[in-house]
Image (cartoon, rainbow, N blue to C red; front, top):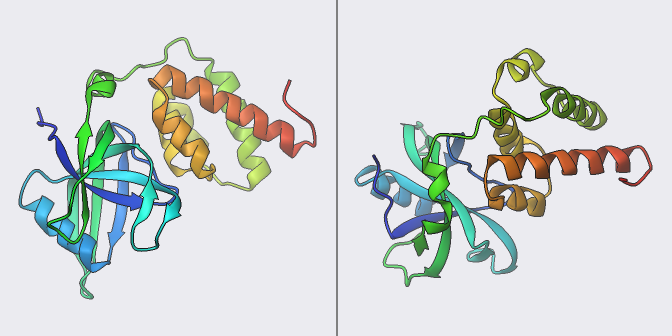
Length: 209
């Protein structure tokens, strides 16, 4: 079992979240984050992904308090000096305080206690209405012109669909953050269902009931 540290390097990203059990590919090219990857590869391979929010500066944007930690499971260095890495989501965390950097990248004191369920077996959502959820998803994807392999969707557990759509679909940053912060898989499913209903109603020129 991986030990979750009290201090974590954080990688601020606009419009990106990482949920437990999911994979996030990243193309690393900024020198400070290349340095971060070098450092974590030499230790526990853990990085915290946090969304940026309004405020701060381009060099140091403000970040959300809740993020998702992942472990580097794949990495490769390109000929032009970039890193191509993949993170496997382990657990969400809360930033308690940012630390005075002794490194070029940002680090934070973090608390994992709100998200102990992230390390348990995933909620299979056996009582989820798959047919209704898939119909909502099909409708929204058609509305947005998003292509999808529906055979893969139909074969996957509902919670995997919910989490992968939460990470990959073009939701607004605030919507992604709300999905990240949802208490568990059931709450994330309920929230995404409500979001899809709202978007379909707005796209049809109406308002949700």
